[in-house]
Length: 180
Image (tube, rainbow, N blue to C red; front, side, top):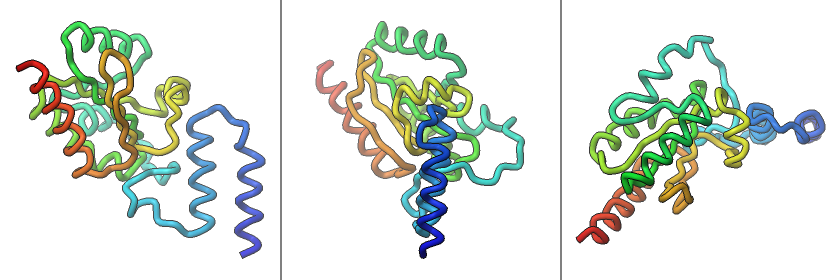
């Protein structure tokens, strides 16, 4: 067990001061893996796992249906302005192509986007927009933020389908109650 502590401390010393989301995520993963926790059971990716190097299917998996893939800070600002102007709630999914739980929940996220067209669904790749993701304090993927007029109203960490459905339904119901 002493070796586990030493490995974790070594990882902390190397990555603790890093501002890079990937480094921080790798740090959390290293510490968690050293102590043999199963992050897959929680539906959360805390670190980068094996990747075949081909992320070309990212757009298909993460941005089908009515989901918009955000690739720049400018497109983020554009979509937030559009949502505010149209009175839409934004559901922002911070994810990664290498994250198993992200890949598992992506089709469900797309289904929800088609079921609730009065809401705006966005996907942000934490690796492509690392600095931006850091500003949102992303510690695990997927992380979902619910925004009204650019302000956070709720948050969900992990690929928990029932909880995501519950939060979206509650927000949708509150919107329809207000508009009656």
